[in-house]
Length: 161
Image (cartoon, rainbow, N blue to C red; front, side, top):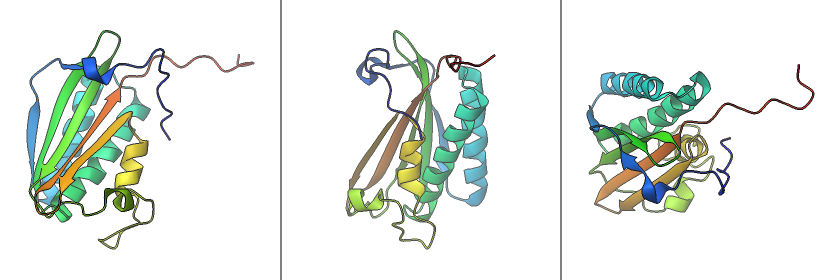
């Protein structure tokens, strides 16, 4: 579970700005899902995310891309490197023109599924990143946006070597 950022040192999402051109990737097939995962890992590594953070981002992206394909009928993923005064990060947006999510609170509850899966997709993805939003309306599609910030070097554990 990703801990909530410390308000004293956390990046301010309102001041985050794109640092490079966004990359848009179509999501229309299983092959596209693999391509999205590969590109998220590549961009995250270039930005400076560690291996564990890369894995969390790829996992969240995989869940959201699959939801875009299965529940939204396909759509697009947009990868945007972002920065603010104190941190570098990556914004991922997944958009579709599908039926929308009728009950966002229910859909983000662990165990809830409409597709026969484990029901960990939206809630699990939310726990893997620093910021997570869903914009949706019945019949108008869905946009799920997440942001993860590069973590600093972890502090040494007390009593560690």
